[in-house]
Length: 147
Image (tube, rainbow, N blue to C red; front, side):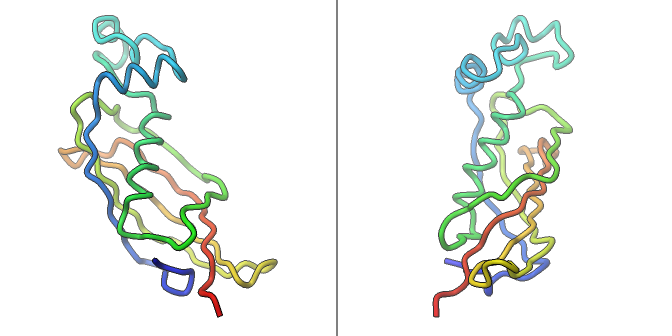
């Protein structure tokens, strides 16, 4: 497990792979983002996506799953403090095999809680062809090493 003191700016971590399943795309969309291009492969052919595509929020959830399973292994888990930026430059498709690359952009000790630090991390989600399907810059709370 890594504590705040174990992480420095420029550190890189990886996670995945994770295969995207068409039934999971539809199940997620049915509950959270019920639009034709997420729900039905035939209906999706006549949309901007030209085929079934995962909701961006589904891709974000898959990314979170890979972050939790990544080689970063933050002590205390991944406690989010907010997302500064998120984007989906390319759709996530059924059968895609996703992986993540994480880079620590900033690391600062909390002014109010000196036993904790705040990490600003860029996470890039890529498919099997190395194409970026999501980018995210988020802030994470990291506990300091116990005395």
